[in-house]
Length: 146
Length: 214
View 1 (spheres, chains in turn brown, orange):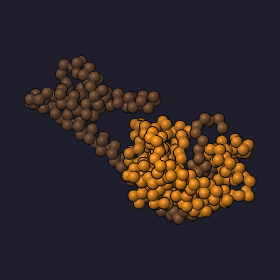
View 2 (view 1 turned 90 degrees about the vertical axis):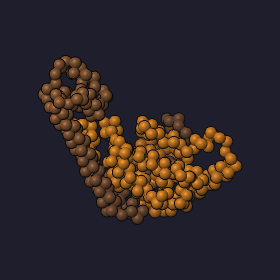
View 3 (view 1 turned 135 degrees about the horizontal axis):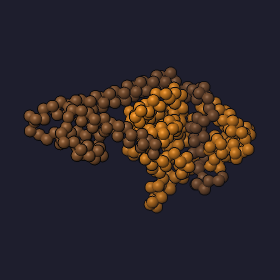
């Protein structure tokens, strides 16, 4: 043996060998599980149910997340229209939203954006969010490449 | 496309019928490596069975409780097997389910586990840290006796079949990977797979012996 790891016990080796399905056909495994009194049809139904529910849940989760994000942006745009009448600081509200939606890292980009703007229009805010969305997707794809 | 989209795409494209069967098979044989208080590797603590552990592993990946990165670990079945291994180990070591210890588990050279966030604790490590009590020694002696008996009974099952006897010799030498067995014996790996199929046909008798070993 090339390896210098501790020698495995017989039973351990035996169960490792038997548990590995490599080289076995689906029929071999099904026949064996049936012999273990496992209802293969029910097993497949149970797995399919987990897959179906899991898939729905994942898709629903993203839709909810996307909807919340959109609602946040729309609320913010609506809020900017009332800025002259509002007593609160619009920039703080925007900063808070960006922090929640995109994480603290996105604040640097937003702050740089604010520095270049004397007054904020609806389009400015839309552009800012488009930039942030692009940055977020770039970050995701670069972290994936890493 | 976002990471979540990509994971979902991979999960939805997987052959779940095949995975379900292979993972249940894996969980079933994996359970033999532990000495369960129930005395039956098909009846695990908390009313669980190896089949349940396999299904829960699938569920955990789907609901994101165990995240899967297809770029880092492209083999989904290997990832699920790791979850089964980890969960079964936790089930065994938690809530005082341990009885007289477990079948020896030496370092797994697969490498797969080492790359995951959660290392699987080695339950034997506790025995090494403090000197064994007379009770520990007695239990270990008992365990060795049971294992030796199981080994003899398993050998009796294959006696007379030269190839299977040689396969047994490989297990005795600590070799359990099909490729390594083939290499060691100078066989084609397909011959090892044929022998595995031959053993599967003796599964009932093997299971009976392994249950007695419990």
